[in-house]
Image (cartoon, rainbow, N blue to C red; front, side, top):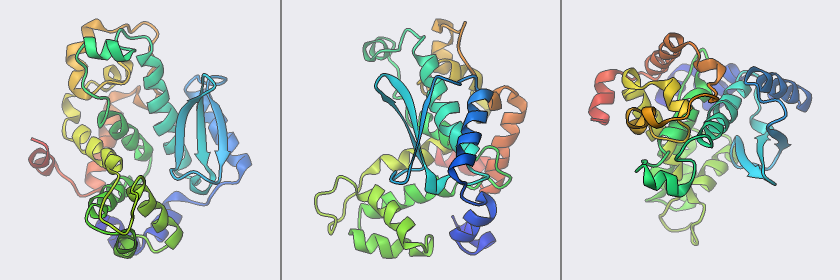
Length: 276
């Protein structure tokens, strides 16, 4: 977060310079169609556009069909494909692959002793959001983590004032505070909804262990933790599993992960200290 402010002055400048303009509906539809073609998903995913989402996008199953709802206010020119990589290239394709595996059900997960899919699932998806950016700052994941951390000890109004250093736009700041305080019956008291810390947690764990993770296998196995990959690989059904286009070249993929580390002024020594 400090890197972004040093380089761009404000988050709003960073968003405008690196994200580009907010796209009209016609451009959003065109970008989505093109992306679905890249992943061979045309006709599989229902897409809708909304002005009322609290998040950038959400992937759900509605009426037995996978449905992606996109927040139009966050659909920026250079960031939209990253969001599609997050929702379709990660969540949807891992879900499809998961459905073919012997651990596809809750009882199957229990039988095979699987760890929870998170923080790996959201960490991987969050990495894929920034993977193609020239300047892949982990701003959103970091600010979500930071906001939740302070929400645990602050009221809504204190939190709203406190994060002004990072987000000047009051409407955007309101959304971050709302996410951190959702579910609290009295927001004048300290307390938080901690799920939003899972993104940064997952990112850092994956970056820490990136040299030892078989990423294609991790995707093929479905909704599993990177920690379970080696144990499960010989049990997997791999014949029809799908790998997103941006993970096909593993050497290039690892170079992009290294670039994320350098851009965010992290290093392997710090990651190892943080995550033994």
